Length: 370
Image (cartoon, rainbow, N blue to C red; front, side, top):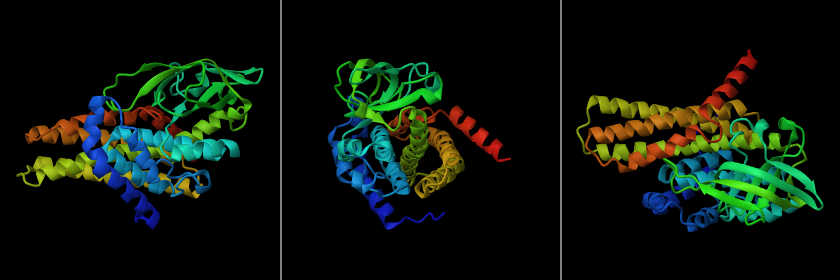
């Protein structure tokens, strides 16, 4: 696997770095205090091709590849973790619609998402977080389509997304009875109940949703009836690469800042050793993420590699951010930015599959190879 950037990858990375340095780096703490991200940010990201990096051009996307997406996520994550997660989810929704959607669905939604409209991924429920087979939200046949009934939990920007990919039970218990639907914002019966007050990612809204006989037409079914589980698994494999990259970005931003602060300091040996550990962890995590991205780009199986990247990157990023915070405190440096990063990075060990779930996926995959 080559680690050098292709021209498209460099173009995407530089576009992300430009927005990160000119806008996000200065606004991240403002967004956190305000509890929301300026919507213009997503329009700017869309204009630079960053909201649909791996979506085909004929669907309105950039079609720059998965490795380019990794580099973009690292740059945005380094400046503003909350912006990065909205970018990640919207890219994931765009890819799902581009791959599984009808021609009408692709034409209706993908260009809007690419331009900066947000897409949401409504899979998790209170009793079905890591286990989709326990899902209780259902979709029943109505006179002219489907009626959705149930609730979803921990949905990133579910209150502001223009389109939601919603999973529901359409058949027997278990994963084979799941399907997914496209639901537009403002659909009658769709309600936002709660915006979670979180430790980190405070500028990113995380909400619970209820569906009270929300009617969707037959054309809203995404993929075939009963294909919801396979759609979710494909999306999560790619999503884990994105969150690995986000975690790397958050930690890379902390590492860059602490190095800048220490250049004019008399650095103790112990601090230098911690900086070295950080750098090794970040380089290793980046290589794991890029390997998984390269496999996905080739159309090769990448479930194990995506889980490995997500597990190692998220766990390592938390340690890196925490070390940077400790160093700043030890050296009597301003620690506010590092404290925000510690708060923000914690959730990368939870969403898109907890670290425990990644270990299960990896363990089973490794055992099956024997």
